[in-house]
Image: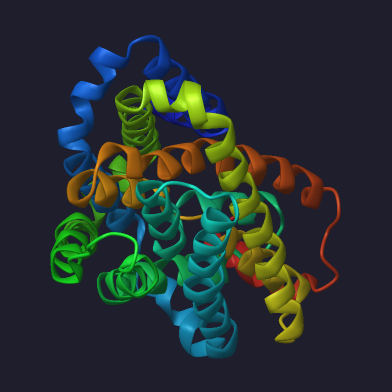
Length: 323
């Protein structure tokens, strides 16, 4: 298991580079990589099952202890990011499928990588995990409604089909992981060190597949879509942090809220776009997967050198993490 643990640590440290390499592979071998696009929903389900295995009831206890911070963060998650995605797409005059793709990214729940970024940034990890979990559990209802409301005038949106897809790809796998850990905790705990390998591999394959399916578009209009994604992520991080500050959240909590709002489950956005629209609509999700991990890592490095003043909150997060 030590070899697997070392490999998992390595992919965790080089996550952003590996995702970038996946995108490059999609451009270099579009025919081979695009063949995986029909399997993206299955890959996402495996990733979400892994997320469920890592969750415990204690991860939801912070909701009861700090309901205001969690509610504020989740509210910002489902308002700031969808509106930003919609606004930026129209500001840059993106075609309808890319507008839908940007809205899908914005309407997706928090990404699991955000928890690691918050930890490295000396933020409130317990709050981050709670926000990711709550926003993910709310996704089957909120994501289809938001996409219908914002993108329904651009392209036909089947909210019911989106709801069922998120149930199958996200909620059911997470619940299955939770149940399995509840009844086989010892075996699951032993396997946890290997989960980063599975998650990172899945995300890299998703990015390679989506980029491969849109290789010509990436080479043609890619810079414009990349600009949209960078703006979306940067404004989300900044406005999320500002929302925490306005809401009176501690400094470590603001970092958690900022990261959670700015980092999305872009794999879900890509999977939904591929399943319900067209591969082109998945392009913003794929590029977001590459960029938000790079920007998140850079921001975590900057914040890591600036410890938050509220050390008590940080200590609570460390205890929760077992670190």
